[in-house]
Length: 411
Image 1 (cartoon, rainbow, N blue to C red):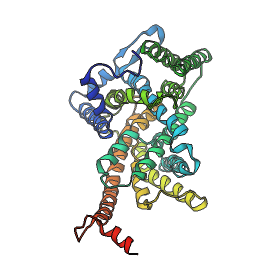
Image 2 (image 1 turned 90 degrees about the horizontal axis):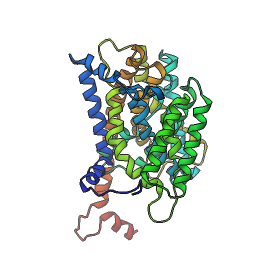
Image 3 (image 1 turned 60 degrees about the vertical axis):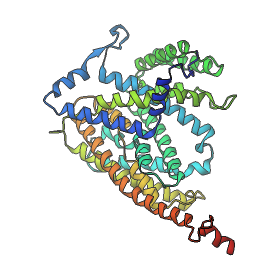
Image 4 (image 1 turned 90 degrees about the vertical axis):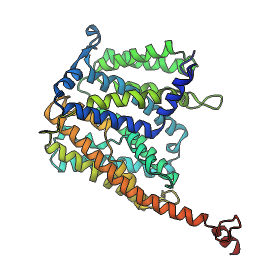
């Protein structure tokens, strides 16, 4: 049986199909966060911390890690593997392949990284955490858009998805470059050989799970030992998967189809459970305020301004039917940092200390505020597009032909 196999359990397939829905992934993420916050702030908060700090794994391989570290370093590698598949598909066969179509969302992603970092620093945040508010949580942002969008143009989702994909790439580069304390050459070489072997097998169609899963685990372990954050292994492995292939479904699409439910239904919610359990009392500080301002103000400001500048000085244009209120709504959605922002906070300050708690509270609060503001703007835009749709469908003489088409024929 190959790694692509759909399996023989219809119940498992049905569950997997449910977990692929954007709204379901977002709800699981939100639920895990609420449970963690409730537990951490309950009389049993010490037990939550003990569970997070519980160490498991072989000490001889330097993998005797806490459960929280396993979630951040191990499970998030699955999330980044799926993100890497999406990244490669977009660059090779998607919107990012065409520079003219990609220009605006790519610029928006860059602006959405620079402006929050500047606002964070200007607001007095600890310089080590400058990258915390630069990330956008794809799962949460798309989930909010999916809940609201009944009449919003499809171009809005395409713009947001492309922006978030590029945002993920930038976040991966930030983690690899700025949050790598020391490099160990021998494990890094071993990890590179593991990635090469994985790619060779996949390129030749050798996709049996007992070949690829152990090889991916060894590559992850070597990456972890090299000093680079282990989640980068997920992206590196994903980039070796072919985007083109014979038949209707490509290897990259099959891998993504298989692993997305694992990422959305297990890996990301478990990480959120261990990363967001902060005791609210006494956690507010300069870092909290700086992160909130950067997410709520910096993200929409950077995304909207960068998009306007590129359209103003190049030939790139917004998709037909979109206006700047739509871009503002998407910019607010970009302020939902969450998963990657929580990870960068732990890398910047170390897990479990006062500054990390401040960063977590800032990420949770800022993401919630940004999501609520985005929901208000996008609901207003949704009503606008619904009125346009209703006007286009109006048929006052009941002849089965919308009046708008009759007026065009008369002209």
